Length: 99
Image 1 (cartoon, one colour):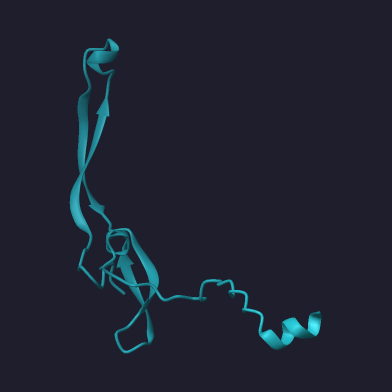
Image 2: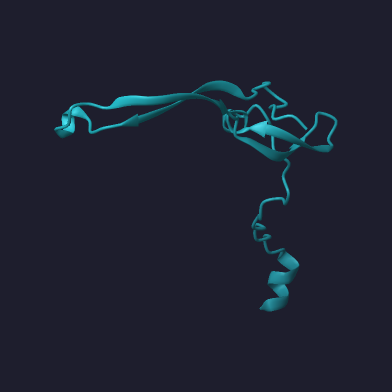
């Protein structure tokens, strides 16, 4: 299973890890120096999410957080929201029986 977003295709990217030493000039030092540069991998923040499919089913996919936040995927509703029932109007027969 690859580290790839199934919606946008975001995948790991290569970059540099920069090691520095010394005190910054604005803090009163002589400045920071680069002591080493090594290659590293920036990995996408993938989450397993259950999404609803167009035909009404549900499917688990690996999606990056940007796609979740932007609304590119629609999560499955696990439970219908609680709804308060409106009080029913009293019928004339019940009102007459009470008096």
